[in-house]
Image (cartoon, rainbow, N blue to C red; front, side, top):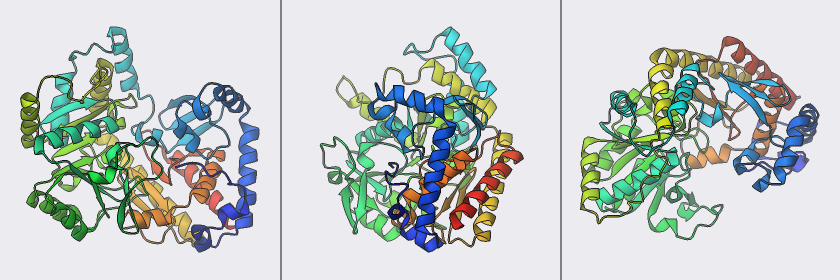
Length: 469
């Protein structure tokens, strides 16, 4: 998602979502100009740093995604602790973005800080197993119900590795994804349905292989379409989030995953669930909470309390087939793994997160707070009589510009409005609240307090009033 360049023009807000809400485009453009002017005036040190950044960082930021925020120039952070972020200009904000899930359990949790500080003093990376690896493996198996695991540096890497393992184990090449994708950046997944036909995403840079040769795409919640593709007999696996979160939140229809799993087993394809975002559902993730039985499971950024790391787990059957494929392959690089994978720092962070942070008690608090957030958002939307809904998965919720939760990626995409989203996000930021810059997603962490929820809802109510006029 790229920040709209015409955020202050009237034409930018003459959109279907704004029209359905009854917003006046001229008023929205004026509000956008006022919010941008407020931000510029309040952040001189961020502005100065942004100017210096521009001389040496591509697009003026260390990662071009940092331009996807709604701000006129990048907000520069001084510190982040718990559910609060402080910027270099001295503004303190309550954080419902939480690093787009990387800090799902809060920033700089004392247990993680102590563990990584101690580990740094003992060394970070040796390409050898560490004293924490046995404990972490046992805990992953206990929590998530899969017996065999491997580590990676990110969920995207983990998914790349899983695809290699499964293609090697099954002898099949084809991947099946749902329209609207999932949250990571594995090359193979960027195939969309356009007018009902699969098409490689136009926005991809440097893509040299035609992805539709080995990737199929269907709509989420469409069992007939899923069965048609599986019947080809060449699908190695379905790679999905159990709840779509990358196109706007899309929940599975009742009974969908149960029926989908039966189809996968019938046609000899495997199910890979990426739970990086849906780990918000409970201590064992969405699959454990809802009785799903994936062949492989991926867990990314939150598993290390903010330290870059990921893991992926296999069923006993898939693990045996994968290890057999490796043993029978010629010697040489498998294409799986990196030098920093499973480093001692990451394992220490995982042990602290799983053992002391992502506890049952922490989840109970997160889920209760998230329910208050979702209910408060619904109430504010209803009082303004807006045709919007709020969708929730555990500690994660999202308000969407449609009366009913979308049923698939196409419906979710149709409800998106980049200009309106960016205006709302900037207005909330100016009122002391951060939400995820990609659509309208919010997370509650164990440190989120009732006062933080009250601040969010007061800011949200004020912004809706300003939009409505």
